[in-house]
Image (cartoon, rainbow, N blue to C red; front, side, top):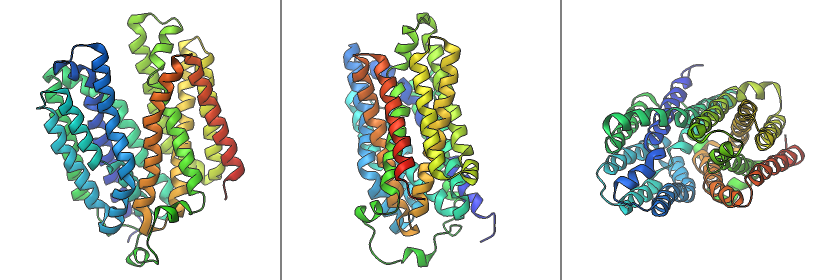
Length: 394
């Protein structure tokens, strides 16, 4: 394999990830409006149907991601990603024709059964790149996965305004279809650093054996903690923005700017993590990233000025982005090629559990005090930094 032939694989899964994550967020932010169009009129009922619809997919994906990863180890990850993206083409198209709220929940549940391309894409990038380029490859894919949700709602809002929410689901299906074609045409299973000899290494990979890899369980905890803090702002940030004195008509705009700053700086953290790891140890990058995120959360909770909250949002994004990619890179470096799918599937499960539990816990804490959410985030990041600094083996 030439020195650069592996890059085509990384570009393929990066493009597919961006298309998939962008397509998904074309419509999901507007799901409450779609539920209302299906005849649900009570605000509480709309919130309930929306919450169930949004929660069922990551919950099922978290349970099944390791299994899909192991199937990828056995039968090839390319066909698993193609399977996942094809299912989303069909299911998102089906969303355009539903007539009841429970139809949406049912299709979202089926999506959870067939999802998993996100973790498989990271695994494909990791095994395609040479070991010394693995952090850069993982960071590139995660940058795409972060930027997709940053631009998706804007594109989706334009689509919904022009053609309506139902047809916006068709646009989402087209995004997945293009991603499917990109993987099918550009990704080559032969351009990887996982050889047949590697795949035939001794022993059957089990959940317990994966957890026994050096630093793997610690990185699982780090990924969970980082995702937990990252997703905690969704339920409370608009409420806090209004609480600090931003006029109600401007709350959505200011909140959107803050979320966009977090997404864009998070993408920068993912992208530059590889360079940081060339200069500093992974333990330092993860611990410093967590400390930076803790500082950002603390500043948000203590500030009364929008400009200061923007700076804090930048710190949050940079810290979480760099620490997240470094955590995946550390775990990926100890997973043998025969277990890449299972290993990254388990890491994705940890991420999804953090994603699913964080909004619920943050919302519950906010019922007492919104500041409590930011204090908990500071505590979680401080503990993470201390544990990684003390326990991580170099």
